[in-house]
Image 1 (cartoon, one colour):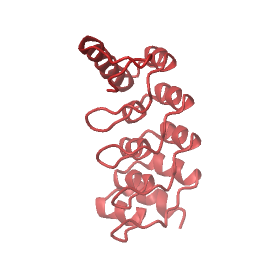
Image 2 (cartoon, one colour; image 1 turned 180 degrees about the vertical axis):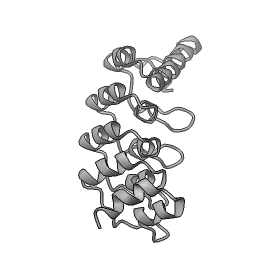
Image 3 (cartoon, one colour; image 1 turned 90 degrees about the vertical axis):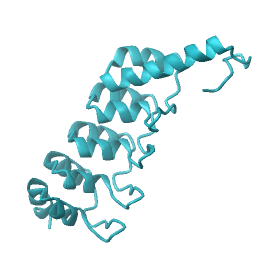
Length: 177
């Protein structure tokens, strides 16, 4: 936490504790899809840059837990769709793993880099392929994901899907070849 209030005055331990509780509560709201209540906090000045103990932002929690309305509200208010968490995952990679094509589309339409590579060189398309999420694979391809990108080990999305036995994703990726 910042340690100072809006007037620049040092916060007391009680004020600091209350601020920490509010931020913690905001993560619960994002994770559970409490859009209206979270929107009120964000509109009142809650930072979209706060991260929890895992480095997850409000956007990451809303997207990863499948809350399309909350995700869109955060995106509309400037949340960064390309922010990595502590394990090197972006909100787009998270929804590709979980299988939420409508949220993947919203993230890309709001500026998520569809071909952004993580520390292993893997893209959102690779995650969707590996975890056999054919609807997400289809959506990403339609949005311009590059199936020819190679990860740090030289594997493409279709090679990764093959290594995981992700038959539905393999079919979607094979259809473009």
